[in-house]
Image (cartoon, rainbow over all chains, first blue to last red; front, side, top):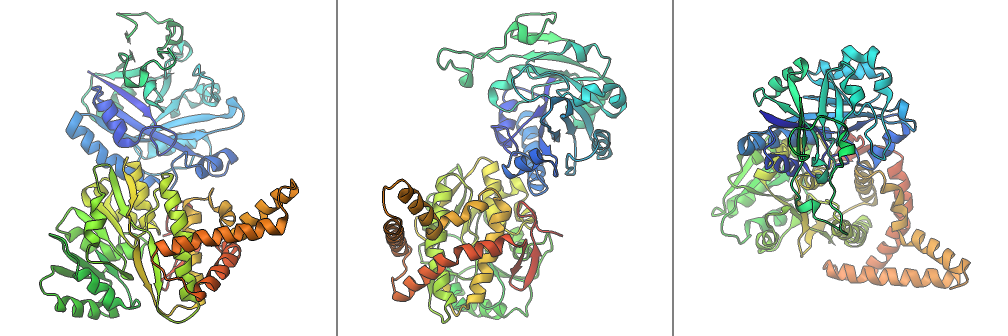
Length: 264
Length: 332
């Protein structure tokens, strides 16, 4: 049994840690798998162009480097931590309006794809590469940030095109997604170290990309809230310790203490 | 590792300086695309003069991407005996203690050690002092400032890194997809959490007969690479010329009746020139009247050159036309 975080960002887009730091960060905590999923934006849209110029996303120029670093770090992660590192990206269709924005995770991808075009074509494009298409944060994340509701409003129509839907993307659990009957995945959408305290997916399969993908397709998985003991990055600054409140965790059945909530 | 192509000015003397290096253990790896390249005979001749120095010559490219310089380097890179690789262009000349100096600041956190290039001209043509002035003022100044602010600016004329680190991002083979393999080396190292350092001493590039056309073509190429790599910084480049920044500053000060326009502009030009004279001295360039003229022309050409750079995406590298995409990727 191992924990996996399949939605993590690096300095290739808007994450705070570079890929080797991510590998050590998760490896030292005993995780069995991570997927690095940096943003890919639309080429034609204004927000996409802005993100490209600000180096906040993957581009055709940086993708070969991204893949090469992930490949070598995956080898190191396996050697040092027995941890699987999956190459991914997050196709980010951003709009000024929440109901028009959509983010799609591509896990196990091989080639670069721009986020332009229809949602269905993008999901199929990911699957054509042998990857898994996951609807990222389809409902409110509970954070003060632009939301991506487009996929949720088309969930019936897109049901067959996605392998999983994020039931939690950070600290907020969504009952709406959980009871929808859609295949589920819980991730942290980690951009900075403190976001490690969030929902994760737990697997019982082999530590292998193919086995993990099969487990997601079969929904042979469970979810767990991962909570760190107070650590370096959480040391009180101005008297604050950042811990998710019970309300932010959602009204889930709690087994054990708040720091180690398991939900299956 | 020395990639060679064609006859650079004083190539023989430049190569000999590498055979005179003083360092406990090193080897020289020369790469030429073909035996017909005139550099091939010269490097063979120089190597025969120094039989005690371990040197190998690799002939033939391995086509791993669109960058001909990297294609030329691949055989040598794969055959290198040591982990520390120093790539150095054929047109630079180094002192005997170069390897000691370049390696002394290399620590665990270092990804690449590079150098500021000092242009020393001996040849004819107005392009030569113009080129030297460009390297010793504009490039030296902005490169040092960029590195200070954490930008991974690396110059291929002197680039020291560890092969084991470079292999973490795919080695030089991956860099062949980009025109600015030097900048991408620094960028990749930064993404691995490593730092770019600049040697304390500049590295000398000898400039021979150099026409204005050659000067222009080279800086259009460099400008287009900068534009492809940093599209947000490129629009601000005209401000790096003393005419434009001076004109804006003088206008602002005169507008608020702090200082008259022409006085401010003259004062600004004098301060700017004085700073550049100090910089040229630090770059080991003798201050000559020709340099002053070259400096004024260079500053005046800044905006026309910038406009030319902005008008296209293709570059000419030693007779080969290459098309650039955003991010410095070469079109295949």
